[in-house]
Amino acid sequence: MFGCSTDLAIGVLNGVPAVSISSPSDGDRVDADTLVIEAWVSDPNNDMDELVITLASDQQENIDAELIVAEGLIRFEAFDLVPGEHVLTVQAVDPMREGAVD
Image (cartoon, rainbow, N blue to C red; front, top):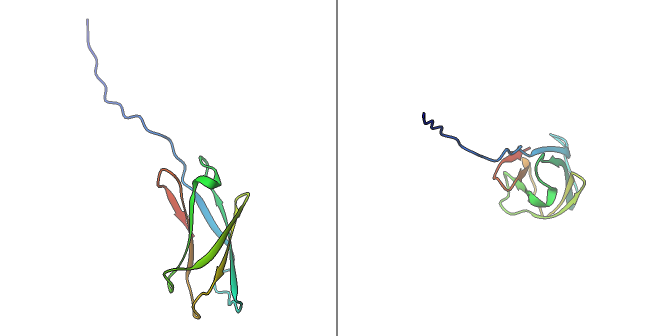
């Protein structure tokens, strides 16, 4: 009788979320009290309500924004942004801590 030993690691296959900002476009100038940021977010393994979706600016630590989610399109309505040029990013992170940023 022969014995056999194999090391085997069993994991969970997890796809990475995707994020694509659709509005405003790069370089846009916005003169409004409320800035609307729209992005497409998807994840092959998770529903939208399982993702942590955040909005960030390189010029302002805390952004007062309302998040609206509808069929993969997310919409932030940002209030009280400090005047100036901002680089805005939207990030989506799934429960397995895989994430994407645009």
